[in-house]
Length: 185
Length: 421
Ligand SMILES: [Mg+2]
Image 1 (cartoon, rainbow over the protein chains, first blue to last red):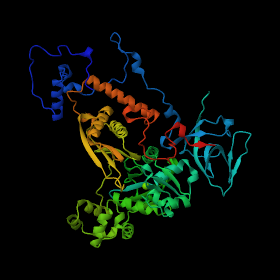
Image 2: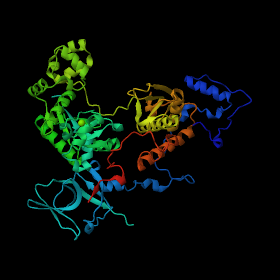
Image 3: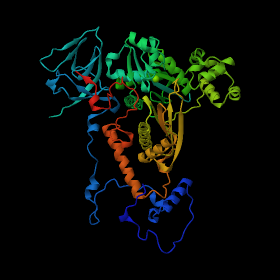
Image 4: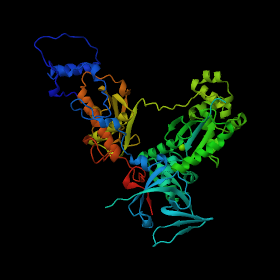
């Protein structure tokens, strides 16, 4: 921890032929022993001893453009931060979850196997929304359609037919899908 | 009316977390085990109905589990921690003053609401938490924290899951049937002593003379009695008090004899403590370690030893902590023992900004180390804990405890997201 950068050695550091003025200081006991050990081993470089005042934290400026010829970059003045994809995609952090798609029943709206869906549980789930539904203990992504008392879970792929949810089935809406993350690869 | 507290408590929290992403578990008996797959620490209602008690060791209930196809999970604390922070985040919209009391409980200040709206407000909180996070909660509302706890107990038994105790008659009626042992802060020991003196229900204590309680017992119990009377003595502690000491310890999956494996385990604990210290912007100047064999082994002699190692200066530097525990282990390791558990404690914690830098810490070195560990922590945040480790922790972690029944980290790992068809 205490290695000193030789290039940054203080001018006038190191042993001197002439004694320098001294001062008594108060140290915790383990430190005193350490100090004596180091001294005995000849490892104590007076350059390592820096007044403690100068060791407090160094606040770094938030905008750190290289100062050239003494002029700061004028762009620093206009910095407004960066775009945060999380903030854009997630409106309710506590209620938002990610799920992975395994089936191909929703390819018609661009949801493919392997894609990740962003699901917000706090949003209202009315007819027409793409939802994660739980049907008989299984999570599935479908378009929700409500016609009167009838609840339909509609795939977006001609290979599959809409599922009509009957009353005796275990059914609930888990959340509303807000976005799909689909890599092109 | 002076104060109104609500205690929000998640129902069978760890089990509920598992259920959110495995809806097929609904209606089934489910339990979650303590670390090292020891005892049941969370039970679904269906598991409770089978007679599985809190803290039952797995081997004791093995038969019930088999016969009734009880679904058993190893605990997945980092996943539960994430779900907990979602619940707390959701609660914050209902009251700006919130005290996170434990991983699954929080006190809210509801003083600003009219009394006749409290019940519907409580029901609304319950509904929203369930909707947003999938976690069912119970809500108890009362004029003191202790009475809010009592109300919460009662709420757990009601179908609506919300109970308000504010009117004097309601409070008395509730306390009359409430066992002293279940009152917040009264353990079985005190309740036993109290019952010798003829106090068995919470109402008995509420109506007892408080100066007599202070003299016969102590000021803490007197305070509880006042709280049961409806006089608020405990306020909301909103700011999380930084912990006075930190511990990291684990039982081993199987007995360990090698000093090398012990060193790896202790290094792991030292590293995770250093990480926790940095997280709470705190430092330690005294590290204590312990190693022990199993106290239940009949044929092996019991060995336990510990030692404390002072650091040269207050620090949260992983390498310094690892160095300390390594040197401590050399002092207490005994050849031939079958070690079952090891752990590290960080003591004499001091906030980072109160550390007076020592003469031996050079400024540049300190800044470099700070940067190093900021990067270290950032990488582990981003790629998951344990992505970057110190070599002294070892890579195989042969000492790891059993967690064979762990479910996925549904909210924390891209590879383990819940699957939908
Ligand atoms: Mg609970």
